[in-house]
Length: 333
Ligand code: NAD
Ligand code: DAU
Image 1 (cartoon, rainbow, N blue to C red):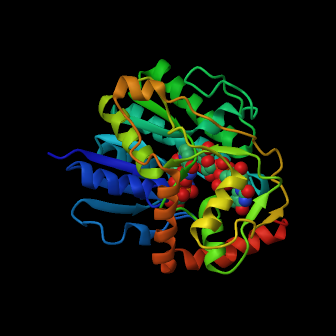
Image 2 (cartoon, protein in one colour):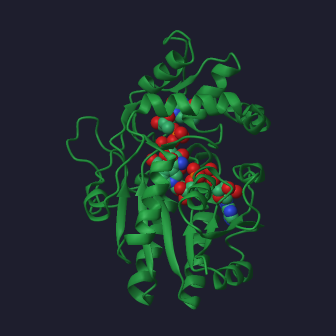
């Protein structure tokens, strides 16, 4: 019998790329549980084999639904979340509900039914680093989240750790750095700037743009998640990152260059309140223990492929663009 994966948030950016990765790297069947919020798109799953992928539209906070789906699964991979920092600053309510109550609901179901669980989380739980800090985040870095988003993700990680220790839940956790690639919502930094350039608008840089993010191509993240599920030690946390540190100004300049525009053709906009300065991941444990290594080692090549994808898939992102820009315009971003 093929393994059945329950993938929460499988109609979102990383989740849909994970579903595609799983289908091409295993004979697994997939049930996607996704509420199809503003960030989840049925269209992202279009064309996938119906005999292997089933979409259930529903909420991870729905105890009965989650229970019934977990009983049919061999593995639960939990991607569903409210994922955008800027949104969490305007209304934290859904972040507390989905990221905390939703994770609690899943943990209780996997506890009842003894199902293997993988929890997808973020490097933002560790707070931020100074630009010149020689240390990077590692598995023992203390939690110190800054935003409503990152604090609810931190809380969800702690729930998982407690359910492992108190109830013996068979769980692993991964904390990954910033992803980029196809199917990412246009509210996020890289797709927002690519689609701005396509629309003849200038890219928007928060503040001075010195903030550093540690970029990883989404397929490399998902290959690591699969490696952790297949070969990781239950109860452990693994950090995922590909040594991709870049400041935001350099990323915008690279996008403009690759899209045939002058590197200076962007504008500075209002900074994000509480803006984390720098994230950087030390993924040694993942590399040495599980033999994972990123395949997309050139950021410029990954960025060029991502630009090509947004150019070729305007019908996918166009319906979200105007509303997203209108929301940013209200706060001067
Ligand atoms: P996303 O916002 O693109 O997708 C989230 C998905 O979850 C959407 O399909 C949405 O409809 C669904 N969802 C939201 N609330 C739900 C609910 N209550 N019930 C069911 N489904 C719900 O997010 P993403 O960027 O793909 O991130 C996926 C996961 O990876 C998140 O847990 C995030 O914290 C984590 N992560 C993201 C990054 C990144 O760079 N994007 C990096 C590290 C970790
Ligand atoms: O580090 C992992 C995290 O990466 C994930 O947990 C989050 O889900 C994901 O959204 C991402 O968070 P960031 O806040 O780092 O990503 P975002 O794409 O929103 O912004 C990246 C950087 O770019 C950040 O420093 C803010 C800046 N920015 C963002 C936007 C949207 C701009 O300068 N201009 C913009 O228009």
